[in-house]
Length: 479
Image (cartoon, rainbow, N blue to C red; front, side):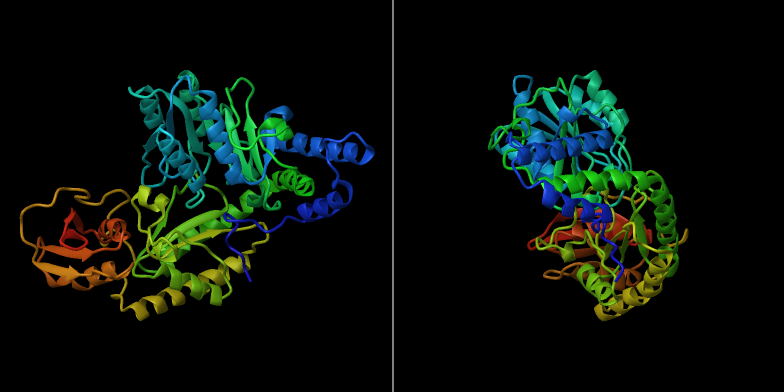
């Protein structure tokens, strides 16, 4: 069964398995003890730290191992903010950071701090100028800035070097979440703190990395002991740490050739999916992106059903659709980008992927999408083209104020989840005259994102939204 969800967790690398088994025999003792078994464990821990530090591009004494990448993010943000509390309590993040960063930001706000969240363009890329403006704004002085090296949902690479230079000029440390990019190479210089997670590169789960440059003010928070320079409490999971470091070195040795191979496979998916499946939006930066990841969204498709059908066809993929989330809210990444969230599919290829796997995926995908659309009663889909879809970011009238005119037609989609509100709109758009307005009543949060995105794809005008007696009224003018 082809596994296409490496961005969530990569399959174990063979080197990780070998190192883990060896370390179980040699690295079970307490590395803090002076007897022979303890010294042996300490040698293994020091070697693993040296290997990981070389891959990260830092000194071994700047890097500690944590119980997970999420813990590394929380400890890194909390420690840096506490260390610079006399400077200020401001935190700057992008709107597409991993949920671990967003949760840490929420905790900071709850504790009385301030958070500035910066938007992104339609490719998911943040502007360095936005960081420059945020660092120079008045109010609570900025203590820390955060920026992922590459997005976990759409693969867009972020301008880390440019943002790091801006932060350096403002004497503000920059924390980089490198979970997705570290297997492919070092992060650009200039960062102050860096986090990563072993299971993203084929190491064992339960091992994270936190690097803090010398000179960065850092006050560890939470449970403290003498382990890991006082920055990560608890007995080290030495066998897993050894396996994580060994597999990181192995994947980095393979990175150049694997990146070339997987980028070619991903480019084939990016090109062929819109040709094979009508009404599809491929999202993320087409050039500055991770080599193994591609994301696309299908109009008029229930994301959860689509993933189940792909699973039945023996393909494991993930999604940012609200339909696949227990909270029934769209992916915060797709929302920030302003792109379609319904029927979203993220394909992230592991090292074992073959061209035959991709060809078979492309062969079964059109039929599965068509079947799901038929079950939902969706209108006949059209392939995107210059006469049927607006260009990226060209949603006509998006966000405009709703005028006082009376809609020619009201579509009641209350109580219906994605993608049904958009399907109901698509069914009736041709029944009103050009220039007339349709009001869509919906109470699904995804409609706030998907109706404007549908307008962009179909070349219609999104007039705006206003509160209704129940739900929200979304106004669309037929173009």
